[in-house]
Amino acid sequence: MERPNFVWINTHDVSARNLGCYGDDYATTPHLDKLAEEGVRYANAFACGPICSPARTSIFTGMHQTTVGTHHHRSFARRPDFVQMLPHYLMAAGYNCSAINTDLNTDIDPDEWAAYQSNDALLAQADEKPFFAVYSFGESHASVFKLTPEQAREQRSSLLTDEELHDPDNAPLPVFMPDTPLARERTALFYDGLMQVDRHVGEVIENLVSAGVLDNTIVFFWSDHGTGFPRGKTHVYDDGLRVPLIIRFPAKYQHLAPGPPGTVVDDLVMTMDMGASVLSMTDVQIPKHFQGQAFLGKQREPHRDYACGARDRLDNCNEVIRTIRNEKYRYIRNFLPHRPYASFWPDGGFFATPPEKGTPEHDFWDTSCL
Image (cartoon, rainbow, N blue to C red; front, side, top):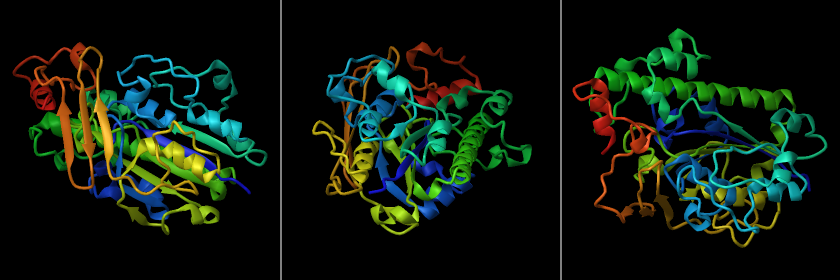
């Protein structure tokens, strides 16, 4: 059996609601919108946690971060020998793999790391071996909210023309954010960064076309967790955990898709399930210790009734929060309710110095601690 290639395109800190194909009219995401038109869009995909390193570790191990001990941000946990990263199983099955994102809370075996190849090398060898390639982009990261327009222009939107930049006056502010010039400015900067991520997605697709491998490749797009807006990242509300997940199936592998191009799937899935789904589509036996459930392929399981999540230490801000969601409701249990919940500004935890009172920055910070 000829096996498909897989490309995982991922970014930081984007909620499902932030993309045009998920209904955001302010967003400029034509390449992702096209990917959704040609593929399948998951309307209820959830991360295991609202912070990058625990969430990504969960994705690549196929296990809840609280099970593996990788639930504290930027910590290190030694995994049991039987818990391997997803590329380990794919390389054993004959795949070439590129390096996965290093923002993980555990180690990667040096021999395995040495076996990873560049994405360009994978494309060049596609006639010889199928591949699993990971492309990671970060212009949408929450730290954009701390940048000035000049800094953001250099670091997050350098590929855009001045005419393509988003107009702060039209920025869609959440109802809990103050309608101030600063809030509008930072919101527009986020959408500029997201547009640049979208531009990268277009470049990846074009590279696959140029290499002649798009027709043999299943393309995933996902975010590690939700938006960097207040009540998003670091919070276990829907905005912190509900993420975009788009999968494009070429005609050759359309039989693996849950529906024709343009399908919207409402079933609950978790980003932790993606690894099991890839193994299922390659006929590799899913390891018994995986907590991720295949939602595609021959080993597909019945759809989830619940999606679970957790929030623990971020920098030196300790939290013990657990959450579970079904199709309609979310339950949140805070095991340390006596502690102040003030961990956003943004992406800094208690290491971040609050802005001076009476300034626009302080108003934004104050809102972010909701």
